[in-house]
Amino acid sequence: MHLISINIFQLVAAGLFGAVLGSFYGCCVFRYINGQTLTNPRRSTCPDCGHTIRWYENIPLLSYFMLGGKCSDCKQKISPMYAVIESVSVAWAVLLMLTFGPTIQWLMYMFFGGLMIVASFIDLQTFILPDIITVPGSIAAVPCAALLTPLGWEGALLGAGIGGGLFWSLRLLYRGLKGVEGLGLGDVKIMFMIGALAGPQNLPLVITVSAFTGLVAGLIMMAVDKDQEYGSMIPFGPFLALGSMLTILYAEPFWNWYLI
Ligand SMILES: [Zn+2]
Image (cartoon, rainbow, N blue to C red; front, side, top):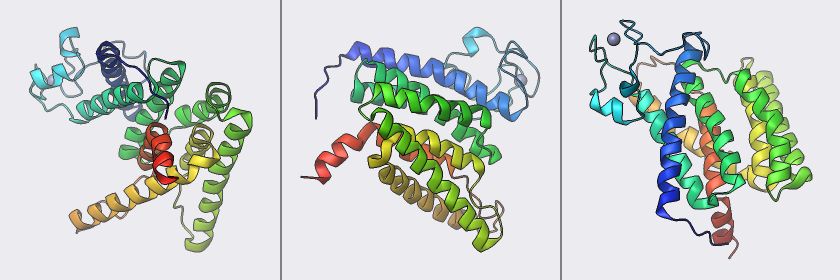
C-alpha cells in the first residue's frame, strides 16, 4: 500500500468541510421529502412553527446539541436525522482524507459519497432513490472513474454495465418469481453509478457487504418490529451506498490482506 502523508490540519479541514456539506445534505433530504426546492423557501424554517432558523442555529452538529435537539421558539423536537446525516458526512470526509490524502480523488469521492448519503436518507424515509440524484450520478461516474482512477475507460464502463445489468436482471427475476417488485428501478440506476466507481474487480465486494449488512438490518428489524408494523420492507439503497463507500475506502487494504 502506498503511504500518504496527512497532517492534522488537513484532517480538521476535511471534517469541517464534511460538517458544512452534511448540513446541506440534511437540507436536501428534508426539502426533497417535503416537496420543496433548494431555492424556495430561501431560508430554512421550523416545520412546526415556521420560525426562521437563524444563522447561529444552523451551525452543523454544534447547534443541534446547543439547542438540545429542540426548536428555540416552539420547543418542538428537531429530528435527530440531521445530526446523523452530519455525522456520517464528517466521518466520510475524514476517512476519505486518511485513505486518499488531499487529492483530486478525495474531491471526486466526496462528490459521489454526498450523492449516496442524500439518496440513502431519502430512500430510508420514502423508499425512493430519486432520479434527480441517480441519473446525473450515473452519467458523471463513468468519465470521472475512467479519467481519475486506475480503472480507465474499460474498467469504468465494464463496472457500470455489470453493476446495472446484474441488478436489472435480479429485478426481472424477482418480479418473474414472486410477481411483485422487489428491487426498485432506483437500485438499478444507482448500481450503474456504483459499478463505474468500484470497477468489475471490486463489485463483488460491494455486493457482499451490502447484502450482508442489509440482511443483518432486516433480521434486527424483524426482531424489533414483531407486529410487522413496517411490513418486511427495508430499502436496499442505503446498504448499497454503505457497501460501496466501505469498498472505496478499504478495498485496497482488504485485497492486500486477502491475497497474502
Ligand atoms: Zn418551531
